[in-house]
Length: 348
Image (cartoon, rainbow, N blue to C red; front, side):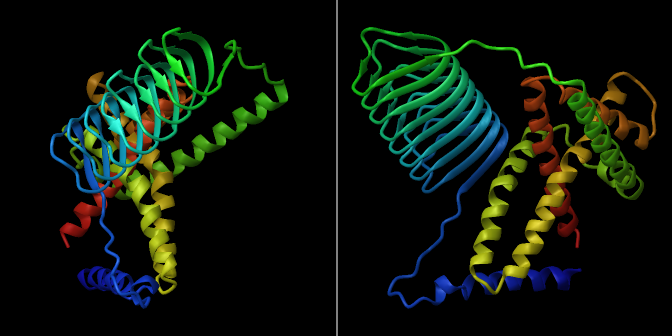
């Protein structure tokens, strides 16, 4: 196994060194700098990041400068430092107080751009409650349940918004056109009985397929999976899952460009998509185990996995909240699978 791993590693190095880009007749060599990765429950960025930043966690606070792009995902996020590139951020509560030199793409339950913030590029925002209090050089486009534009807000371009309620101060300065579309929250249309039956059949078949795979995984790797300690690393596993979700396709694309490494790229992508499918199934084992411990219910590994999978499937039926919970569970599963690979190869 060591020989196989080392052979694969040197194939990867060979591919990068002798890619078409490296062999091009240029006077200067292009150096690819990897982003800075950070993940965990509580993350504080208080030192300058020289390049791009990818960070995930329960609580995130950035007080220093980032000299590249920033990709941020978490529960409670505060960005007080300056981002010298693009900022892409998603979280439950997001507050931006620093400067963003390029574009801002933001999604959150509560999203606030404070009066000390300055956004130099275009702005795209989606959320439940949005507050715009800062200086926006370019256009702003958003969709939300409620919008508030403060009296000190300055928008140098157009303001386009699809919202249920809006409160725009008369003191706010909007240079471009103001296009506010108000909508009413409507209940979804009732589906016909035939479509409902087809939807239910599809969900039942999907559940049974996942249950079959889960039972096989428990039979083959049940004890090894449960040996993984996740109690102290829940959020780090989610952050790791987010990083894997973003980075692996980029790496596979880089390898594919080299032509020589196309087979290796296909293998990586195949493993990647298999891991994505198995992520929720793996997570259900831990969910079932957690529930059995909390309610003091004695059950074998098969029953625990089935209970966890059933609970996740039922939670997914809840509008909005269910989707968010399933996303967290999905990222957790991806992180656990990657950790398992890492532990497996480190022992070889």
